[in-house]
Length: 65
Image (tube, rainbow, N blue to C red; front, side, top):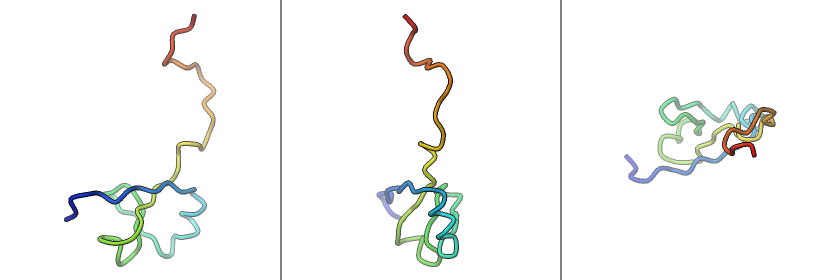
């Protein structure tokens, strides 16, 4: 077992869909890894959900003045 985790790389859901034949989803990592060698080698890909939609609500982090 690795002592350091492989960094997660955030990619678009379209790229994940295009690479589906060579990727598998790992529930343990909550990410996609290469089939056959993904357990120890290769990238760890996650869907980039950070920019999918704009936030339209009230920003509750700062008080309104």
